Image (tube, rainbow, N blue to C red; front, side):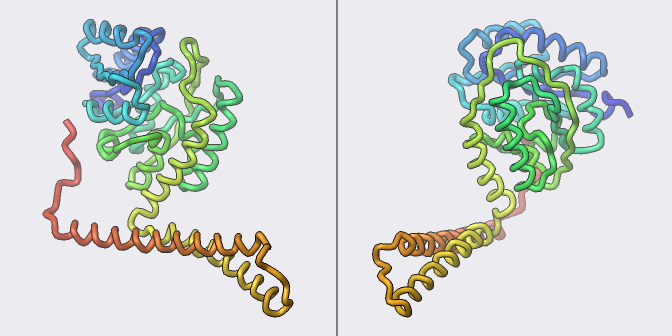
Amino acid sequence: MTVSQSFPTVSIVVPVFNERGTLEQLHREVSEVLKGLGCQLDLVFVDDGSTDGSGEVMGQLAAKDPRVRVFTFRSNQGKADALNVGFEAAKGDAVITMDADLQDRPTELPRLLEALEKTDLVSGWKIRRHDPLGKTLPSKFFNYVTAKVSGVPLHDFNCGLKAYRRDVVRELDLYGEMHRFIPVIAARRGFRVAELAVEHAPRTWGRSKYGFTRLFKGAFDLLTVVLLTRFETRPLHFFGAMGFVLSTVGMGILLYMSYLRLIVHATIGNRPLLFLGIVLLLAGIELFSAGLVGELVVRRTRGRASHLPLMPKDRVRE
């Protein structure tokens, strides 16, 4: 079976933020590649509040080519929101996301679609990156930690070049910085996730929209993803484990302080270790209590849901 038979229509979702100089070339190259495959193109641009004239260029492309559709935010909302809009609008049997700066090469589309025939989501892996060291080092650290914590063995979670079956994008509801964890979310929902090494081209227009601060944002978002995917129905396992460790350490310190005061008759009122033990014990109790409250909320929510009529598994999003 050929790619065009497996995926007669392919949606290309492109979030755009100040990339005026690459849009026409991107449109031309994507059109040529999919025409060669025999697939029908559905090109979705999402203008994420561009201020450099990108909106006008996309409007001109849409006026000339009926396969191009443009959705516009009045202000910059972030990549996750842009992808949400693109996923909602996508009509294709396969959906491919790529950045607008042409660092994601359209020539990789045939390989992505071929790989997608055997799985549900294909994530690109930029083995050789053309980015400054200040961007690549934090990214490597982030990818390593994410793979270890999530259990999804990918090398590059940040790559914007990804291919999805339509069922996958229907299940995604992104916000904040969650677009970095799409493979983790998809894997936890039972979809098959694969990785494909792709070419990463040097930037020829504009500048990177991401700085060193995304490392800290990514850490908090990773914690959120782990909580929502692995502990959504058992929050006590998450908060309780941390609370148990902290309270155990705190109790051990306080027992040691009690030994010094009662047996050795030492003065402990001015020792920082005493206050550390108290803080750790209280923090552990607070976390454990948060886990219990979470369990009650989950049980109550699930109890209410059990009395509701069944809904179709797939939501209609068109």
